[in-house]
Length: 144
Image (tube, rainbow, N blue to C red; front, side, top):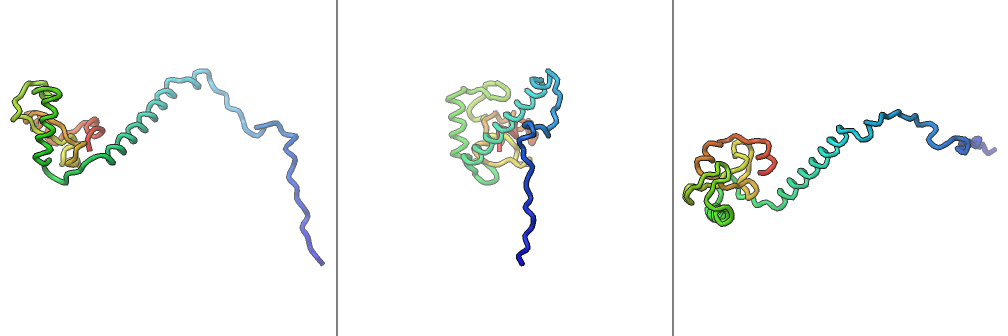
């Protein structure tokens, strides 16, 4: 004797209007185009852009190991700075001699910065020593 289970059928969905089981939420006219919504959208796009920038920076950056930048890199960066911007320090805007320029770690080594191309900038020796190991949030975004 063959035992078979009764066949179960699903109720027909023809009788139900589309989305009948989904409650509708009343929205205020301001909620659809609110300032908060625009700010959150902008913040999301900004975060995505920062992540993409840091990812590309990590792929294309040259790391020199720990410590000082190589002499040839320092000289080349200072020459490029003088050719492009003249003899002005970008931090204090003073005119300084070539010998007073130094290559600074944007994010200090003491704060986890690397000795890499993306973490190097040219400033005068006075600004470099005044900055010390202090970093702003923009330094962390720009440097490595």
